[in-house]
Amino acid sequence: MAGEKKTLKFQMMMSPAEAETLDDWMFQNRIRSRAEAIRRLSQMGLALDEAMPGLVDSVAAEAERVLVLSQSVRAAARQENAAAGLVASVASQGINPLLQQISASLAEHIALSMQVDALRARTADVETALAGSQAVKDEVATLDLLTVEGITRLGELLDQVRQKKVLKLKGGGGASASAESRPIELAGTLKPDDEPLPKPPEPNNEGWERLRDKPPRKKK
Image 1 (cartoon, helix red, strand yellow):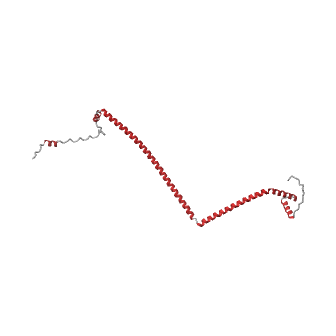
Image 2: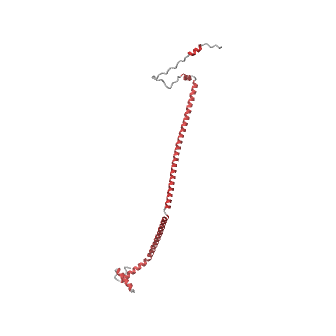
């Protein structure tokens, strides 16, 4: 359209107000003739008519978005008003009940924590008792082992004693005589520097000899 030659002519009727408006538009856009101004306005009108459906759709979408935003703003305003009303009601009713609820919940939490600590202490006691019982079991097992070893050793000693008795019986009285003739060894011996023990006094037989030599009494 821009490269084509302008060969067609036509007349156009216009009111004085329209002509004045056209002249003002010519002056604002620095156009030299009315024909050029009318040509440009025609091109603009045709382009706008072609783009009008897309513009309508975009305007409708924009209007819908603005409507959604306005609804969101209204909902936020209602929530804010509700929160303000709740705050006002709490302030009017007093904050003491809320503080009481908070203190009660804190007391319950403290009681639960104390119960948990007690359970932990009991668990530690149980673990200690289990460890002690295991140690006792180990000691009992050791004692059982020692007892079995002692019984075995005692049996071996008894067997040795029996064998010695059998050998003595087979050997005769020589062994017993030698055992009887063997002197008894004292637990301790006198040292050269120690004093000797005093000798016991000899028995006095004079009185017994007088009674023996005295004649018997005669009966009256």
